[in-house]
Length: 383
Image (cartoon, rainbow, N blue to C red; front, side, top):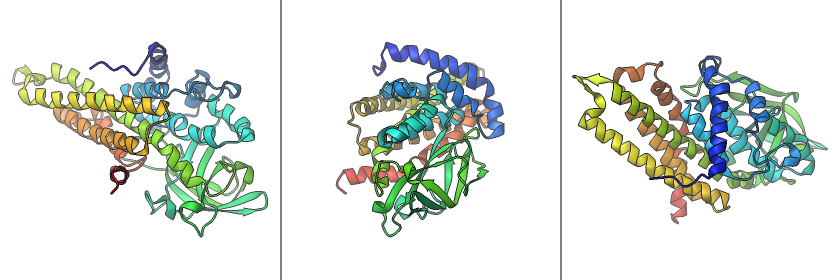
């Protein structure tokens, strides 16, 4: 079924971004996988090409266009190029972290931070997860105690995407440790602040080109001027408000990665022969591929409707959770079945499907686990 989400502007943008990926990302993927990080220059190159700040107002160096379809095109093209790990930092920067700066920064903060975010000179990240608490953010122990015109921050975070490269770290803290949800605030920590340390670049199952770090804070003095939202205690509400877009971005990536795996497998089964015939001609192969193609088509159209809802300001937490849950589980199923159709070659890292298999496993965990998504959906049913 033909997709109707995109218009001619998005098609032109896709061509430009595909050329950017083919020139700046694809030739370097293997090296970045070995390095376990992308160079900072990737962000500045993307910024100078106009691919980082589409939604940032023009006065701050952005494109001034609020249309998540452009974000979706970027995600789809990164998945098409098997660049999920290398591109994760870019999409985190634009899809997940930028909305906080746009929604909650005051005029002074926007002037200070948005131009660098648009140019790629200021790489962003968000630090929520702490060791031992998983999805239970209200139980975090990182504190920010006010002392005059500064907060003194102490604590630790883990599994932080862009954790090594980031210059601006939106950090969930307790400004009132006696409270749970109502005690949370969002504070921007900056590279170079004394006592703000980054641990090792974590060694992961997949997503090897993406830097993922542990962070520690020891008496870090952060100006009160770095508080997002203008008042303490708004952090949990701010996080909940922005999570639907984050989860939709992950859903877009999940279904796009599934489509890429299917396309690559179709090409493989048409060429690879067993018992004198292409393995795609066997009934089992046809049935498996038909099932996957159908499921991906259905998921694409649901996600497209979610993108429309987001643009209209109508995407609910429940619908975003459905998209995230279904598309990441679909990604896992599709990649696993595609690897099986590759036979022994699917287990070899020289084939893209092997990397896709390792990279896919995390998507059912980050941004809220599948189990948390089901909990949100269940509550939406009044349960």
